Length: 133
Image (cartoon, rainbow, N blue to C red; front, top):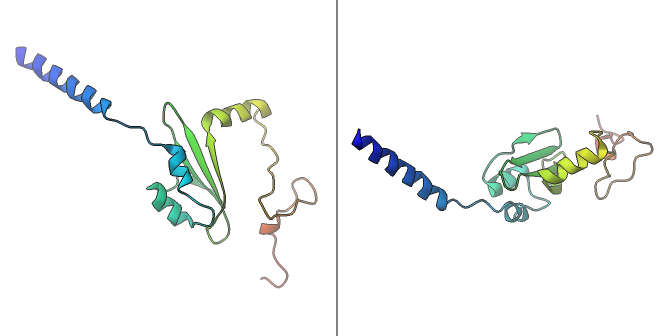
C-alpha cells in the first residue's frame, strides 16, 4: 500500500511539472505569417495544420484555447488563392451575434468588387463572363 502512495505522488508531480513548461501558441503571430496571395496549401503549411472547416470559397482555422479562442478566416478565389483574411476572437464573434440577435449581417463586398445591384444580388465573381461555357 505504501508503494502506491509514492507512485501517485510521483505521477502527480510529473503532471504538475509538465504543465509548468507548457506555452500557449501566439495566434496573432501565426496569423501575421500568412499573406494575401498565398494558396490554401501554403497557408496550411505556414499554420502547420489543415483547415478546421472549408466551405466553397472560405477556409476556417478554429483554435479553442481556453484563454483566447480565435477563428482565422481565409476567403479564396477560384484558384484556391487567398484574396482576404480575417482574425476574429470568439468573444468578438459572440458579441456580434448578440448585437445582431443571430441574424446574418449583409456582407460587405471584397476589395475590388463592385456593389451588388440589389440586396442579395449576384456577386460578380460568381457570374459567368460572356463567352464562358
